[in-house]
Every structure is written in C-alpha cells, then in structure tokens.
Length: 615
Image (cartoon, rainbow, N blue to C red; front, top):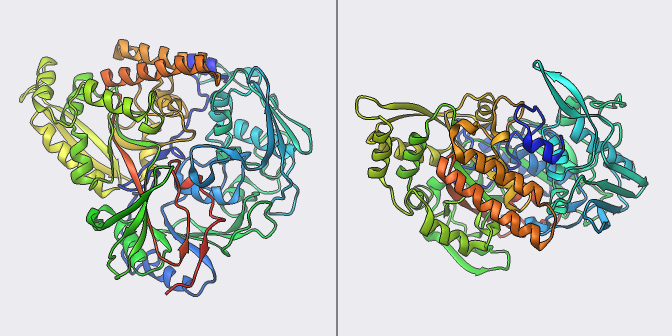
C-alpha cells in the first residue's frame, strides 16, 4: 500500500518488516545480531576443526558469524545474512565503510526532479556472476520481486518507505476487503539498457539512503520464478540457499547453515577487485567457542565476549572524523596485542511490551526500576551508552547534546537512578500489592549479558509486586513468537536501515505494531484503548509522512513529530530503551582493514581488505 494509505490502515496485511537487517539480537558488542548461543565449545567443528583446516586454505579473510537464514536479498531480515549478502550483491547506492553518507555504487550518476519524486539513474557497466550484463531491466525485475514475491520480507521498503507509485486491487483477506498491490504496476522503468527511472508518490527525504539497502540489489531478470510472468531458472529455495547470483565483488561458494559460508573473489567485478581470494564465515553461536576460535588465530578479525573483555586493556590512540576510536587491545590470552576499533553504532537495544497483556502501571514500574547507567557499566562493562530515547544520538533531532539534555532533564523514570519507591507507588495506585501481584514472562534471546540484566531486573521487580519469569529463546524463535503475538515482554534491538529517526520510530507507529498483521514491524500492540498517547503517536507518525521532502521546512516538521513520538513512548512505555552499543572489533597485525563506521558491518564490503603473512 502507498505510504499514506498504509499509515491509516489498521487491519492491513501489507508488509511491515519482520525486524532485523535492522533488527538485532546483539549480545554486548554487536549492533546487529550476534549474541545467539548454542552449546559449542572449542573442540567442536565450529570452534576448532574448521579453523585448523582453514590455515591451509589459501588467502581467505576469516571471520566469525552467527546463524544465517537466507542468501536472497529480498528475504533477509537478519544482520548475519545481511553481512554475507552485502558481499555478493550491489545496489544502486552504498555506504562506504559503513559511513552514514551514501555514494553511488551501481549508479554512475543520477538526477532528481524539482519536485523530488522522480529519480533517474545511469548504471555502471557491470556483469552478474553468471556473466550476464547488468541492465536496467534487471533492476525493474528485482524491484518487482521485492514488492510482489511471497518470499519478500521487505515489500514495505518499496510501497511504504519509498512510496513508489503503483496501483492497488481489492482482495478479501480473512473475510475483510483490503487494498493490496497490483502486480506489474510499479513505477520503476527501464528507459534503456543503462537508464533506470523510479517514480515516487511523494517526496521521501531518505530515498538515496534507502536505495543503499541490499534488498534493492539486482538479480538477473527471470532468474527466480516467484512473481507473475516468470517461470524462473531456479526455485527461490535454490536461489536462497545454493544458487544466488549477484553482481558484487564476491560470488557464492558454499553455505552450510550450521557450520560455515564462503564467498570467492569475482574476477570480473566492475569496481575495486578483492585483494583476498574470498571470505570464510564460521558459524559459531557460543560466546566461549567464538573466543577460543579467535584465540587459536582461526579468525583474522573478531569480537570479544563481555565475559572475556577487560576495558583496562583498551588503549585509544586517536578518534577519527567518523567517531571511530582506534588503538590497541592487549595482551590477549594468546599473548598477542590486537588492533582495536570502537564506534557508537546507529542502533538501540530495548525491552518491548505487549501492551494488550501488560498493563501500563506494570510497564511504568519496570521503567522506574531500570537503571540504564548501571546496566551499561556493570553488565556491559561500559561497552555502550545508556539509552533514554529510542532514536540514537548521532541522528537525534538537535544532535547528541539535545539527546543528552532531554534524557537528563526530562526522562520521567529516573536518570541514572533506579526509583523503586516510584515503581511501588504506581503499582499500589493500580491496586497491586503483596496479595495482588502481577506475573509476566520476559523472553530474551540467548545472551549472557541480557540474562544478567534480566536477573537484576527480576530481583528489583520482586519488591514492587511483579513476578518476572525469564526465559531464553533462539533469536529466530523469538521473532516468530513476536509476530504471532506470543510475547509479553522481550529483548531486541534495531540497527539503521537508513540513518534517520523515522527508520527507528516506525517501530512505534501504532498501526504497524498490531500482531494480527502478517508482518508487524514490532510486537507491542499499541492500540487506541491504551490511551491518548497511542493517538498522539499515530498522529506524529502521520505528520512525518505528510512532510517528506528533503527541505528545511519539512525537516523541521519531522523533527517536531519525532519528539512527539518519543514523548508518547515515554508516557506509555511501549518500548523501554536500554543502551546504544559501542561496537568494538579486534584484529591481528597481518590484517590491513578499515573498520566499519556507524552503519555497522552489514553495510561494509570486504573487497578492500588485504592480508599479510599469518604467524
């Protein structure tokens, strides 16, 4: 559905997102999903044997990763898949080294109409990994797949975020008539082989940033037969798991979902050719196995689990213009001193509530009990910043200083303070007490640090008449339960699809939080019956959609709406921000590597990495 229609819909099955790519299950150090945990140790195939074999396996860039779900860019909603997809598929635009400012990638040049609704791109001369030339028609086909395929998790990127022109048709879904996208009517046209035109319903200030997402990358026209008019050369299941064909610097080699993935350098890449033979991704879920894998030098670059991290070993030598703190860390357990980089990523980690099942006084009591500063300092060992707004500091209206001023002076639940007395009062006013306690379940993804945070919170809430049961679930299971409306309280994170507040605050747009939708963008079920704040939040998000142009006037209106949304969330506590992460990476001296900036690792290509002799 078009942007404005979608915002007004309450029963629509039009796609909002299934989280991630944006969504995160970070365990302490990553701004995307990384903290899932299995039961591996240093002797299993992921923690040891694979790495030993790799020492004799050519000039491979070797990294750890978590569970991946797909190699199809329109299907991916998790950051681990996105990191691999980023190496194989090139969209029109790109964030160089994950810096939050886009430049052309497949786009050699572009023009924008005076009314900001028509974008015309000239394409670079490039080939797919099967040897076919990349044309504008391939982009048209790929945009149609993203919009119309049943396998797409990101149709809302086209119909809602960008607001590409299209027609709708009426269909009956679950006994209710709904306006849905009419296939083949998308305002994306191949003017000629190298000229692509995109027509928007209305301006959208972050159009170029949005088009840097790999969901918009081209695949050969007709490759997959999952939309009308194409039989397909391979099934979508084959394309997504064993036969992806892209146009990026690396081509697909192999993927075993529980063990590893590999991509190989593509010799005919149109851009800067990779300096390494390929990239090996070791799929390791356990923090201890990840640590052992890195200490055995099986990984060239790695993260340190918080349990093995010592902030006293960090030596920062400089901070660059992207806010990256660069220096060294050591000694490591193996005696080496590693290179170090830490950067505040554009993301937020939070606790969400199903507002239909958790009353407002309970949600407010949790907010009073939570001391974000304590969590960051004691649990996360200062690997982040306390979060009081949902929008990250670097993109907050008025900048980081305005973020800090609001948090310190206006946050209603205690800045750097756990206000258990206030929590007890709000519960008593609602009729709760020792003989009338409230019981609820907090579901966290498998993460040592979130487990510790949940334990602290559970102990605090016991004194304010709340019995909190904490359970862990694999990340994908947590997302599935959320979409089905089966979570009362949960831990998740969100990293930027594009660096603007609306990318984050869409999670707080009440109509998109309804778990009766096929793909709710979040799982809080924020409905009008929850109170006036829900209506204010919906109106604020509508104002964002009504002022979409990249002009100073519209930006000012959006900024006002962003603050209104943040305030509505403060009042109703749909989501409780906990921390903004400090993303830290460590690598050995044989690696020549520019660490990613604030957009995170899923936005960085690895063709510029080079390797020297390993010890």
